Amino acid sequence: MDAPQPAKALSLAIAATLTLMPFAHAGPPLLDFSRPEVVQTFRVINDDVMGGVSTSRRRSTDDAMVFEGEVSLERNGGFASLRGPIRFPAESAALLLRVRGDGQRYKLTLKLDDSTGTAQYQAAFVAPPEWQTLRFEPADFAASFRGRAVAAPIVRYEDVRYFGLLISDQQSGAFKVELSSVLAE
Image 1 (cartoon, rainbow, N blue to C red):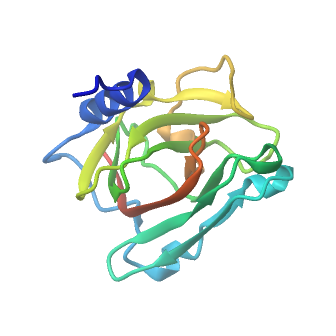
Image 2: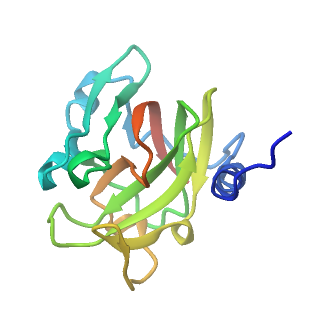
C-alpha cells in the first residue's frame, strides 16, 4: 500500500479537525442555499480575469448550491471561485458550513469588502463525499492577497461582508462541490 502524500494527508487532517456534529448553539442559517434567490446573489470569478481559461458555474438544486466546472492551468490560469454577500451576528465565534463534494481541496474565503485591492481570509478544507458540517473559527483563516500570505489581524466575523469558495493550488480538471447552508455559532 502506498504511503499517503503529505499534502493530501495534511488536507485530510485539516478537514477532520474542522468537522463538528452536532452543533448546539447555531441560530438560523445565514445562507440557506436551498433558496434559489440566495444562490442568485453569488457570482463566479475565474482565472479568466487574468487571462486564464478555467470555467465554472453555480446552480440551484432542491437543497443546495452546486459549484462546478473545470480548472485549467493553461495561460497561467489555475483557479475558479464564487462569492456572495453575508452578514454575521455580532460576537459570532464560529462559522458552520454544510458541504459535500468530490474529495478535492477547497478554500473558504471571507472578505471585508468587495474591492479587488484588498486581502481576503482563507481556510482550507477537503470536500467530503457525504454531507458534513465543518466548523471554522476565526483563527482557522489566514489572510492573503492574490495568492500570497499577508500580515493581518485575525478576522472578526462581524466585519465580514462576503463569503466565497475557491479551488486552486495546481488542482486541474473537473470539480464539483455542493453547499447546503452557512450558520454562525
